[in-house]
Image (cartoon, rainbow, N blue to C red):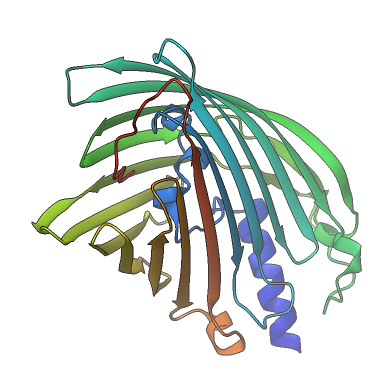
Length: 313
């Protein structure tokens, strides 16, 4: 039980960035379908009104483990040069809950008949809550956990660039530029302990290679960079069979590995599931891995007589 408390405390410190410059962004194995949450320039890129819902249960069977839900909606508007989007995210770990709602804007430029470049901006609000005094601690006098943080709302802004072709994409973004403070506590030695957000930078890239009439290979990556923390990269290799079934494997540096499966129910509906397992963490011996479920639907505009299919990204 003592080890369990230490692990929860460590996970909380990572999430809030208290007294350390740590990675705090939620993990997504289906990051390639959840692009709008990290890059506002992706808005309107699918030439449809696209709705994507995702649920992630991390470290199943581990008390207080992270649980994340996202909902994104985005679409081009009439002139096809503007994309608008809405991203909503809820991330809970132990007694800490962070909810974020963001509006996304993208200006889409056609470089030629086959490629586009979009520049994006985002503006949103974070609502942070932490019931810290509900934790059972080895040191009940720890000032970090003395007070709750209730409905602490802070604004944030971001930017991104997204280049795309039919079978390739690449992007770079910083979805949260402001490094807002959540709390300040005074330690026994008189120094301050500050809980604050850390700015993250994301690089994404993916491609699709045709191996045969019924088989495509789809490698993708998501690279996360933040100050004074190791660079983390998600590397995924997937095969698309008969433009219907997706089977893939992923590796997350410094964390773990897993597998993905997806199915195109129709030209408009895609469902996906993934399972991943953490390696080398103290938590790995106490949990049964992480599960993720994803659902995406494209509402096709009535003005379009036909849609381009398949759309790989």
